[in-house]
Image 1 (spheres, rainbow, N blue to C red):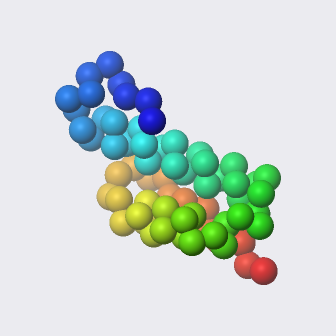
Image 2 (cartoon, rainbow, N blue to C red):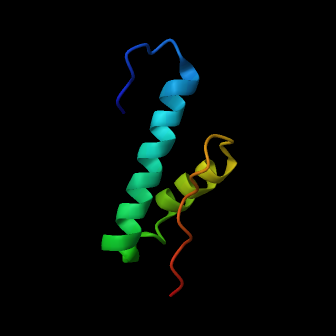
Length: 64
């Protein structure tokens, strides 16, 4: 996790964390789709779906 210049702004660093998590899921869906069924990633997707920040949403799970 990378914090911005002022870590006292929680919305800023939460937004950063959400963006990084979305990038991670996008990378995994492109390059390692077999990992998307793992319980840890399913929980991460569920958490991101509930965070009301920004227009970005996690990519859908690949169907097997």
